[in-house]
Amino acid sequence: MFNQPSRAIPKNYRNITGKFSSIKSDRLLSYESKLERDFLYMYELDNFIIKIVEQPLTIEYVFDNKKYSYTPDFYLKTPENFNDIIVEVKYHSDLKAIFSESKRKYKAMVKYLENQNVDFVFHTDRCPYIQNETYLFNAHFLLNYNEIDNEHYKFISETFFPYIVIQDLMESYSNDTYEQLSLLTTIWTMIRKKILVVDLFQKLTTNTQLLQLRQYDDRQYKLHLQGKIKQGYLL
Image 1 (tube, rainbow, N blue to C red):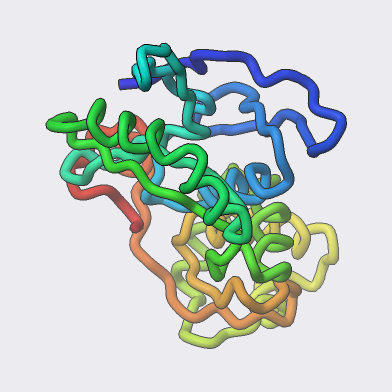
Image 2 (cartoon, helix red, strand yellow):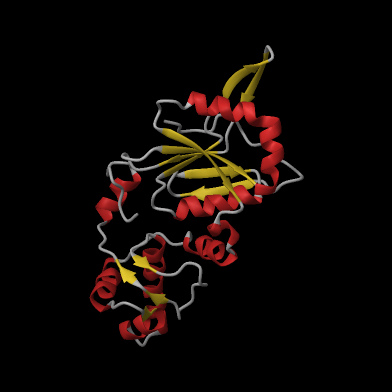
């Protein structure tokens, strides 16, 4: 529905602004606060979200015979059988003032989205993923990994058992440190894609336990990111 931002984010010397490299969206996304950046880590890691667009649309509304405009923070594309999401990112402590001053524009957005199968929501710093610094560290770390080596995947699939420790898996693969680190790259990618399930509220190390191995098909995963699998994949 929304493919490109409707406005550019200006530099702001009071807040953190910057660019976020998104594989899902195949471009750099702009953010204008630390909170927005942290949510981008979460969106990029979440298989339920298949595309992200910042500042996705601008609507106009009238109040007291004056014309106003409103641009929300993000559009999140989801699998076909789910509603897409328009997001306003705010600190929870600011919500009271925001609703007293800006309630009209949010009502206007809800009305605009009627019958479009798109939800309008607020995401705040009370989100448990955002509150947890370890989760954010892990998300930031995992987004550096995106390639799965077929030989490594085959070995992991044949060797895995619940609660195996990453270091033990590496040592069973090879005594050579370089080959172990090569395998580790695939392990991190499999964790990133939710093929290997771990507790992301615990800091990732080679002592991390692998809790579950899920069946993986690269073609299915790519079709999922294109929005062509109705129920989604590896959710």
